Image 1 (spheres, rainbow, N blue to C red):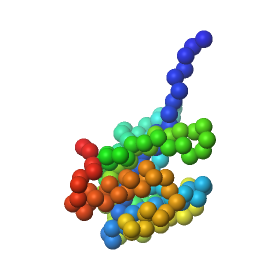
Image 2: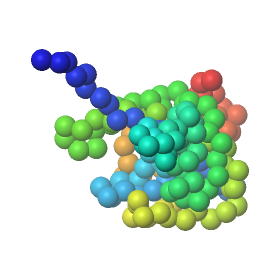
Image 3: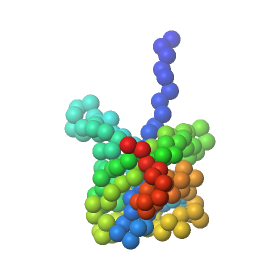
Length: 154
């Protein structure tokens, strides 16, 4: 019998702020708010779709696909790598980066992947229905951009 190691899906997520300092969030099919991002693409065997060159490149692509925003993935956030169980028996490794939004005045647009899109002030985030790992990542990035204790790696 050949051993096949278990594989963990990896989802790269980004904390992105608009020109007014509001964080961009998306509502998923479980009616939870989440950070934009998604899985790394492995490419297709025929080469018609290239694999993502890096987790940062995957995140930049995903945010543009999901919201229309152009971002530059920055630092991996302290406390931003965690295991999430969206449904019983399914675990996903979440890896979160702080992002610089290159189009901060452009209103984000919702894709077919989500139910709702929103921009939230830092004070609104703790009361939202979303996993604590996302809340921690958002708080860490706010501290970083406001000049508080860094909270970023890199």
